[in-house]
Image (cartoon, rainbow, N blue to C red; front, side, top):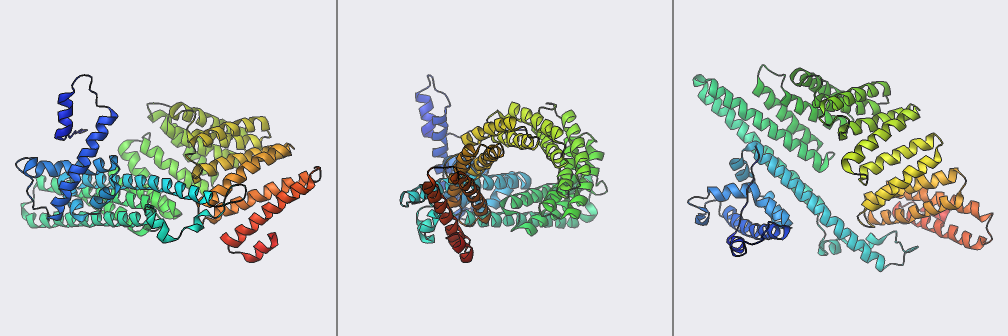
Length: 545
């Protein structure tokens, strides 16, 4: 059941009454609603919480109930929609508000809403941080005369105090707060689970079927809520808080096990086992992951049938696990079975994204087995599916095109590989948000390097050099946007080496040797600076100096 609520302040209501002709609920009006509601609701709710929730609010009716009901569901939504991120954070970390929300919306729904809103705030803060970083780096570039217009070290101009004063969102501080909020929710859930247990003990001899049902229902609901908290902790930072994530899954499993009593073959229990399997798989605890997946798979088959999507989902993950263990035959069997179920279970048939995901993994295994034509076929079908669903210019389509290009290179089909790389490059360039979009730029560079390698293989050194140099400029930009990523620096150094090796070949055939030697010297100097200033390897830097 879906609930949809609209709140209108009097000033907006009056605008509607006064201007009824041709009035539509357009974006401007909706933004105005959000702006007024975010200010009004936050102010009144904050006062209510600050007064230990004893304040009377007659403007919302005979009781506070309608106000509380509305705020618990929609206050954060209004604040985020209006860009009031600080106010949203104040409410989300307020324990009184968390308790109020879970009390008025239910433990499961309240937990889901609060975790969802925290995740939305994280996304908003990350967008704000990306925008800030882009502006700061652009300013740094304007004050630096970097090599070829790019500075390797623009971020080093800014001290911590300057970063804070310039309005940079503190993402790490928020993630710590986010984790503390999730711990508050876990504490509340444990309290409610204890209360339910105590109540059942108190009723003891008077227990009837209704009491038994209520007790089991509460345990199941709290168990589901614990699982949501565990998944949210994993989304924050699965490495730092791995213990707490697993503890929530274990509590979820225990409560669900108690709720269903003798009937342990329940899909809800399988859902938690699947989540635990994903957790163990992320940390390469293969034996634990396999045990969880096998239990979940058995329950899903018994309760939902052998051809259910949940069965396909588990088989897909088991296939990934075996692929990383290099047990490719078992992995392929899992992917093929998962693919078969997904095609038959989906109303879309083979026009389903999960089908394309299975095909991509099968393509990778075929390539590793040197079954190159089968690999290309899998990737091509996956690309057709993703293009039909996501659109031809979606980043995932570029990823598959890039993989097709790699397989065509393996087959020495260089014209076809160049065609695929060129299409992938166009899509990736179009999806780069700005010159400091590290992820997007990195993908563009990956494809540029592949195109350069094809030209190098076919003996077209000038074209190869052109694409390597394009990649080099962008990789310098990437390194300028990350302060301590050694992998990015290593990739940049390899790109320098590719450019230098081609320039050395060109020197022997060029009439302008001094210019080319000057370019090589300049690049060697840049490499020395990277080893010296970034990697702190002075002896290595001296070799390049």
